[in-house]
Length: 134
Image (cartoon, rainbow, N blue to C red; front, side, top):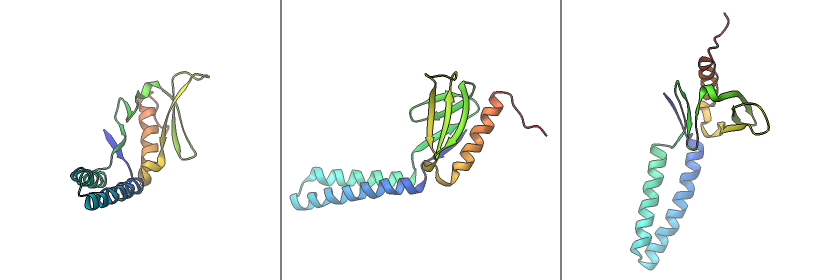
């Protein structure tokens, strides 16, 4: 199983927002001597440290399928894969008006985006029994 995590750039942007909010609640805790604001400040700083140390998982790929935060799809259910406008699009089911698609922003995995795209294509080909002609 291959795990693709949130890249450092978007993670650090979120951490920046969390630290600013923590600074505001820390100021409120200092001025109002509020224990609750102090606890919120500490929790926000801990969340920022956890986010930097272990970014959240964007996608997990294994021999059976792909798992994201909101979806779990089998490779045999994927009809087509394309990359458009920085998005990896996996078309699910039969082609038509009601066809669903799983969308993954390649910006979220950063430098590992080409690796993710290559692995999706390879796993999809393996699941459907395709192999490279040599």
